[in-house]
Every structure is written in structure tokens, then in C-alpha cells.
Amino acid sequence: MVSNNLPDRIKRIRMKAEQSQQEFARVMDVTTATINRYEKGHRLPDADFLDRLVINFKCDPAWLLTGESSDRRHGFRTNTKENGKTLEIIEWLEENPEAHNFLFKLVRASREIDSAVAGLKTIANKGLKVFRYNH
Image (tube, rainbow, N blue to C red):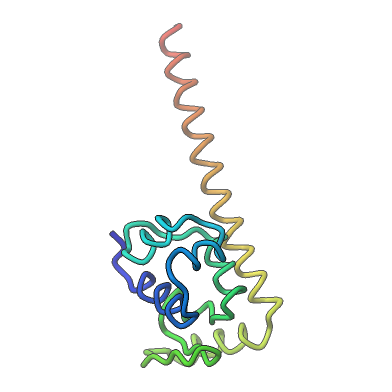
């Protein structure tokens, strides 16, 4: 189970949009069961889902991922512990949508690389087992 409040933030976005889980799932191009799992914290969304969430619902990516920012477009406000540097970075990302988009692409690419490496490790382990068995 997820230990942060991302599930609550996903649900808040859906509720603010006044959508059922089924409607929200349709907009987000996932199943209703997937939305249910995200909101209950039984499953973490992938980078593509988070990217679509930010784009479709115009939410602040820093707030979505950390809960430590304000999403002025939806009126979400949180008391934050932001130090000067963190606040500077968040403000800079808000003022530079191209940087924000690049950051999400970078996160997505990182996850794709992690997935590819895991796949290669699985293939390599199978290959080593076959090699050991034959020699």
C-alpha cells in the first residue's frame, strides 16, 4: 500500500472535476478498477498517467507529486515546509512550461530505462541458468 497522500490528491482532482471514477477513467484512458486502485493506494500510477493528469486537469505537478505546493488553478493550498531553494525550483518550473514538460519526459524515460534494465536482468539470469546447466 502507498504510504504518501498521492491517492488523496488524485481523488481530489477527480472530485474537483465532478467526475465519477468511470468518467475519470475514460478521460484518463485507464480502467475504472485502475482509478479505484490508485485512489485506495493499492497501486502507484505510472509517469504517463501522471503526465496526462497534469495536462488534462491543469494541476500543479509539484503539488501532485509531493503535496508541498499550491495549485492555484484548482485552489489547492497546503502548508508547506518549502525552503528557499525548493520554492525557487517550483516557481521556476511554474514559469517555464517547457522545463516542466522536459522534467516529466525525463521521469518517464528514467522509468522506461529502469524497466528495460529489469527486463535485461531477467533475460541475462535465464541465460546464465541455461549456460550453467549445459556446462
